[in-house]
Image 1 (cartoon, rainbow, N blue to C red):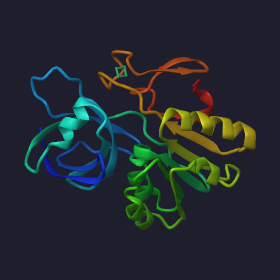
Image 2: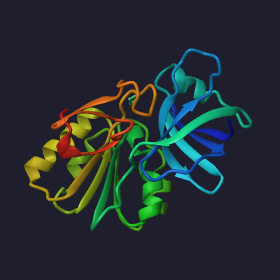
Image 3: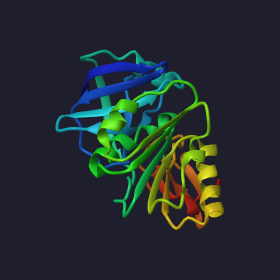
Image 4: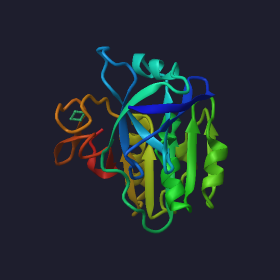
Length: 230
Ligand code: FES
């Protein structure tokens, strides 16, 4: 069991949770979180927002019973963390961009703190959050779009590596933009599939890929955009 240090609402329904005690992790990996001992509800996969020596942070949006229970956590409460799981992001080469839609921005903060120099595109449907943190974390440009289509701001030919995370229609659009633009960039999508076990045992998180079915938790959550069948 780990211990909640803080659980702060940063926008309506969006919380930044800091927990003391963790088993490390690479950029793009996730943990399975659980705050309901003896209650029949599966752990929730939440990507790593940031890590320091003793403290791990998560950014999550209240989207159901589990995350609603997280939102009621207070300082000192126990929480179970299992992980880190997943493949995470490969190190980028060349000019790099992160494109996040809504809560899909979450895995990019830690990655950006590791990489330091990348352009960032943050798209929100209504309220923005964590924009100042992203501005401080990169020496590159940070573009913010509220209520529009963030992908329209991106020149897919201007980058060598692009990481994206967000709603599935956005990731599908990324795949189409890659084809239309003829971009030679390595473009990755980080998928937010439903999960149950988190370790490749249950198949709940199955992803259709061009070379067959894969598991978002164990083979992903990061895939090359071109290999996924949306
Ligand atoms: Fe069980 Fe992926 S969540 S196999």
